[in-house]
Amino acid sequence: MELNPNEPAILAWLPKDTTATEDDFSDDSKVAKPPRENPEHWWTLADAVDYALTVERNHDKMPWIKSGDKILGQSEISQIAVALRALRGYPRQ
Image 1 (spheres, rainbow, N blue to C red):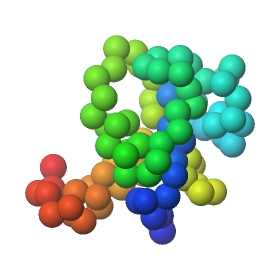
Image 2: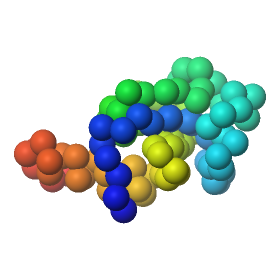
Image 3: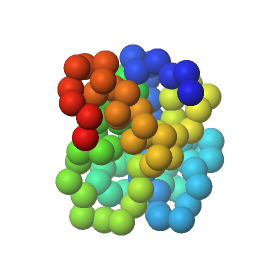
Image 4: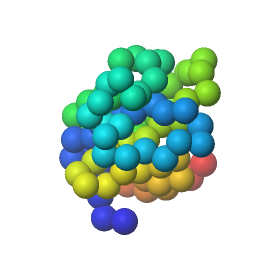
């Protein structure tokens, strides 16, 4: 998967067992509100991934990230996080 970690991204929190679509990133009424207003725009994909995986959450929504024309689910977000840690020189977790 070719993604630029410096490209802008949109993070949306959706109920479990939901598969994100293009509409979920443009229609606020379809997206659940916690932890913030959604969809949430980020300067970079790297920032959106870091936030999605480290934010304390008190809800059962799952993160979905759109960057460019790609929509990323939980497994892709985790894969990108591993790649980012390697690029930054952090040990694998």
